[in-house]
Amino acid sequence: MIVIVFRSRLKPGLGDEYAALVSRMTELAQSMPGYISHKGYVAEDGERVTVVEFENEEGLRVWRTNPEHVAAQKLARQKYYTEYQLQVCTLTRESNYKAQEAAKPAAAAAPA
Image (cartoon, rainbow, N blue to C red):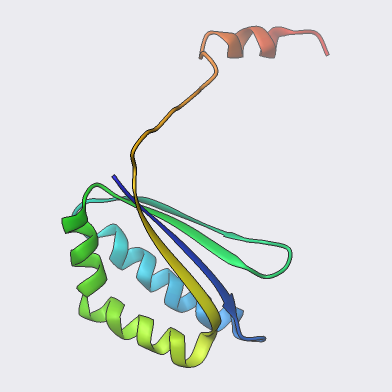
């Protein structure tokens, strides 16, 4: 799995306009081969962080070289970003935890 961490800061007053571009890029990314998921976050200090997952390098290459995505990147550098940082990482290990489904009914049945 390939994990991309994209950190950015926007120029003031462009958040709503930028959101339309993000919406279109989300739609496009989800149509790429090997796309798994992405989530975006905004910190209190205004930093934006998006974490994207692709199954493999090939899927990421298709996304990275998509003409519409390339044009959006250029526009964002010219118009929206004051700065950004991109990190592309290969997953070497993963650990997961989920509470057992059986424990949920017991917690729900506990007296209030």
